[in-house]
Image 1: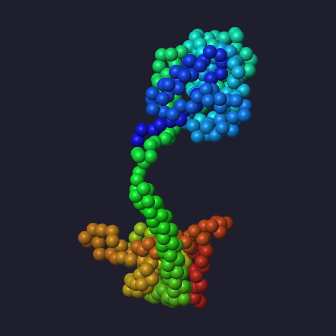
Image 2: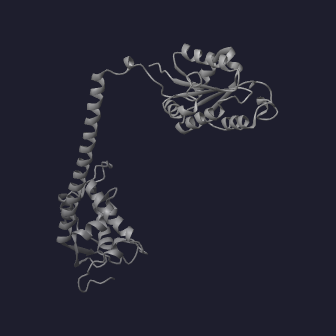
Image 3: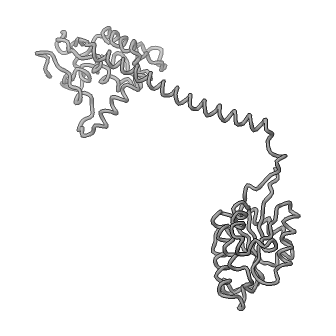
Amino acid sequence: MSARYQMCVASVGDDLQVDRERMVRAVLEMGHIPIDLVATGLLQGESRDTVDRHIGRTDYLIFLVGREEGEWLEAVEHTYDCAEEHGVPVLVLIEGGSAPRRKRMSIIGPARSTKLDEFVEKLRSSPNVLVESLDSVSSSAAWVIIRLIEKYRRPGWVSSTTLPSGDVATELARLSSENAELRSRLDSVRTDDEGREDARLEAARRALLENMIMIPLWDRSSNKWEKPVEVSLYDFFVRLAPELVVENSLNETSQFVPTGVCELDPGDFTSRWVVPPNNLNLWFTDLMALGLVQPSTIKHHTKDNNQYWTLTPDGRTMISRVRRSVLQTGGHRHVGFTAEHPIPILPNQGKR
């Protein structure tokens, strides 16, 4: 779509009527909408509100500045202040602006009044102002306007015939409303899913706490069974879960449980006690029934006959929540489960 811009034109200084008319004609020839604030009398004192209304909805403001102060300096300065307030880009064309200057204001000429000097300096210091020579109007006003538009791109205006039809607008409104409704439903579904997950994990946690297991221990040094250690299935899970974050074999678990779950002193670097695999399979099956563990799907060597277990997504969530609550309490020298959740050891089953 070809955008059209509304451009207000004003001048301050004598003998600029011809230049101003040439600028207005250039705006018209480019297909834009010009408003000559001087010719229409809008810069008169009683028309300030009308000027503010025009500047508030205009796209660009063009000032032609002569060598003399002229009669409209105060009104033109008010117009600029209004443009700056609304963020309207300004093109300033200064008479003699292309002349070389030693000082910043030397192009204005020695005859320029103090108030006009201050106004021009105010224009030059604004980041929303493009300053050009007034001679550019005589050569090609269109190029000056094009530079203004390219430097400060605005949305502009389009003809109603190029806008989407009423049917398209209605369909867009319907799709927007439907999208908002779907987003609302999605948030509701997410809330429901989170609620179901919380309920599922809480049910699993209660089941773990309410069921105790007896862990039989085989002492390799004496080749005999020791008295079993009683723990809750919850303690069994939370202490074993870190070993299952990736996966763990049944053999490795058998050697880990006596020290990692039952808190027995290994005595040396060699595992002294082991737990029967058939018992571990039973407890893993219980945990699997609660949706917390599952057989590992990682491929191993064909000669590897070990059984491997890993956590399910629910198991990961469960252990993550437990660990997060432990860490957020703070003040722990040791954050392992054995320090935070001591297991009651049966009589005559003290640490060796």
